[in-house]
Image 1 (cartoon, rainbow, N blue to C red):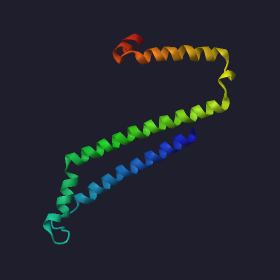
Image 2: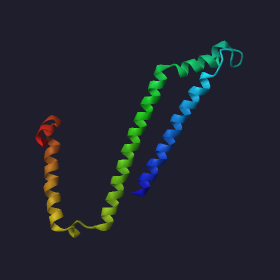
Image 3: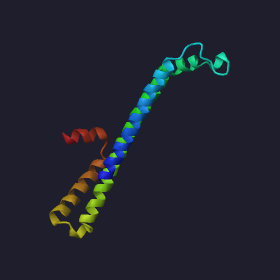
Length: 131
């Protein structure tokens, strides 16, 4: 399960690097002058490109959305990796269902049936049932 944390931290570090690169990109492009031209063609002006990227609300919104979606995905992956690691650990500790104490087995059956019943209920009804 430690590997799940290490992978999560590495991914967060990579995301921070990406966010920093966006800041560097904005800073670099904001320093360009209108006279900066690529290949002598004013339509390829770096200033136009800079203005498009640094003042474009749409680009910033897409950057922000991409970061939020990435964060959500990283957290989801981290939780999944924890569950997989925990399940593997449990399988190593108790390799067979028959090795589990009776109290835990009975509780498992009861809770599984309860969970199955709740899975059939609509979400609104389930929320009111839990209160």
